[in-house]
Length: 104
Image (cartoon, rainbow, N blue to C red):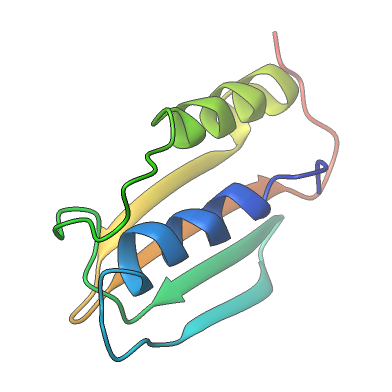
């Protein structure tokens, strides 16, 4: 797993999902092997990316783009990052190849 790949996903789950939810919530991280891929899921039961923000400090909004670019540079098309709306919350799903990758 490339360094600092999960941290921005967790920060997003907190910032966009749990922080706007006054009563707090939960984040669940899971990982499993599916065929020749590593599947990592980060689920939160928060309000999601479209929720109103309670925080005055805003990030620069490039975390997901940066992760996708790093995946593309290292794995080509063999790795993906997808977001999915849950009820309630959001899922970030990261799929990485387990074997050798040809990035050309």
